[in-house]
Length: 393
Image (cartoon, rainbow, N blue to C red; front, side, top):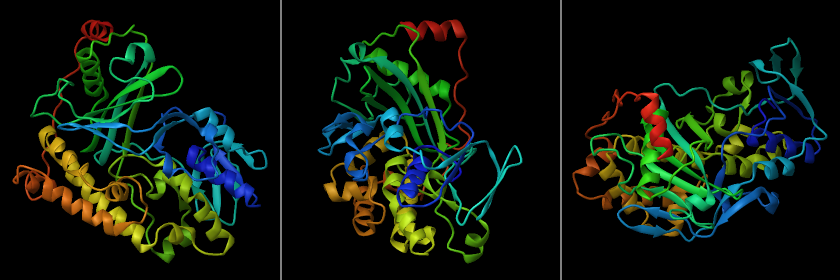
């Protein structure tokens, strides 16, 4: 196992529980993971205890042209709770960075060589460059200060209200904001699908504008987090030659990063036992994880992120307004299901058909403005004194 993020740790933990000998490699195996992890509660595998949930949100809200209350419980994961639920006491954990990762052999930067019957590569993804990207900048605000906008037990999954200060001719972004169960609320301006993503300075400016619009003032020392990763990592190729020489990619590296949402942890944890059962039965884990139905779902979702990455703010709002009129099963097919291709095809078609005005559908399917935001130049960062004043106003 190379990489001990939540996905790698979950895979290693369940492999040990299945009676396998496990060696796990990570540069900092004791580090608590920096990002905030969230998911729909029904995505989590049944073997995870309730202690992995830090905050439950019964019905989060989506703002498009109107407010949509999504009657599907959502949660923020507890990073300490998740780590404690995935002990590696019976695994061999090596501290080091892998410099070479193959199907049966891993070499570390100190010269250590580890051999195994099967190697899983569960490392994160490299910098996206010009790939389709998820970018976000989050500010952690005391729950008491945040209450006018997001109260305890509430959550904003997609807030497209016109409050971030971006003009109609600028790349779109939305607000994601949920309580974390530790007395703070994260306000995170997010961009999905743009090639190369959106700069942190621009996302932070937009986050601060939203807070100011709701009368939320900051102390000036609030912590923040940044996210910037590719959304278009494909599943492993269906080639015997590749399987003979390459490790089995799993998690975000193995195509489990949802192209349209940027979520990967819950889906990866839910598929851990599929990979382990395949190993125990002598089958190829990559093929068990990625039957043709799942590959078709991935292909269709990629069509969605391509469309999302070329829309304006007004077009994005219209598109999401259309999507959230779909049935719960159709929404689930896009947002969560790994291989439910029929309702996914239906909801993608209906979302395009219901996006209005009619001419905007051409952009959504790529007949026009296919590269609308490619090469867009964002305004330069302002001087530090002015930026500091904005952060505490």
